[in-house]
Image (cartoon, rainbow, N blue to C red):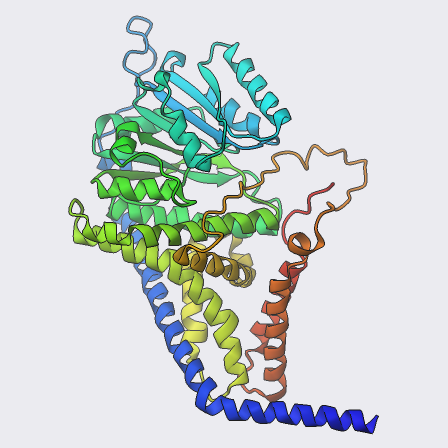
Length: 524
């Protein structure tokens, strides 16, 4: 036994000597450089958030609402004598893929839109691979068609181009040629009946406008803590980012659904392209470079569903982070060389819209708070200024919270959760920038609809069976939890900064995520 203890002591001593030998000449300079880089990125994010905060206040106080800034005349009621001649013909596209739980939602909402039936074409673009689901969707379309609605069920031989391919194919049909505008609703979206009457007048009376985007609202935001966290992030996006872009530059990223396009603008921009997984943002940037303007209507709200399982949320965030980075790689020089938009709009798109929000925001959150800051606990020679470690992050977090005042009490946990998700977003961002293997991965976000509510509550709920690793146990999250625990423990034993309180809370969050106990657990 004494021999074993002596051997262990010798190994520990050798590791300690190697650590001391490498620390001063190698680790300290590297870590100091990482701290400086992270502080610069943090300041860039801080200035961006402060700028948008100031602008949104000025917009709310001094700027007129969209219906006052642009010409807007309400649509007249149907006249028995002139009929519906004054109403433009509108195409409604509903792309879906194996949407068993929610397919009726958007079809029913589209069929209930307050618009003359002879001026409305509803197109269900079904890429489903499950024959049972395809039959159900087609039956639903036939049911509405029997009521006099102009609804068509469209399928393709292959899923080429995914959603972009379906939307592009849908515009090729002869019956679409008479349509001036196209509105897109994903399968879980449910617009109010007056959606078209409130949005289309902007397009009719302002020929320079290509897109009118509505705001998302979430029917299941109270389902679990995961959906509450998503609501906080997305409310900031709609309340601040979209509003600022619309008010100052008449540009923002199309959200892919809940918006209505001028078909002529889509054609001029080159149509739908499937070169990235953010075909909506791709089209928006190309249309903007052609000189088209966009309008965001914060009071035009469309109900939708948030992903409530952690697996679905991770796949969604991969696509939402990888796609913009990949699009930035493909379009940055095209934006720089463009001569139809002014310098400030190009600067806004490149620096603010893409670089800071889609790249820097993810990287600084992950590297600074999950890697660099914990490592400084092991290397006390490297210090992080308290204003960079605490004060500025608190201000940024406070500015992020303005969109969802009702969840202010969840703010601290939201920070910890966002740090966990920053790992996935940073990884996806690098994949997009480098156009690596998963750059074009497209996994449709799983929607549950009312599936859980409709389960027989008399039966005991069993957890879904599936792969243990990858679905429920996530080794990468657990690995980061172990790394942070070691850093926090070292700070308790030898440190003086007392950052271990934050580090241990982050350990708990990574551990919860690592074991998959976030969001809804789907019963088998």
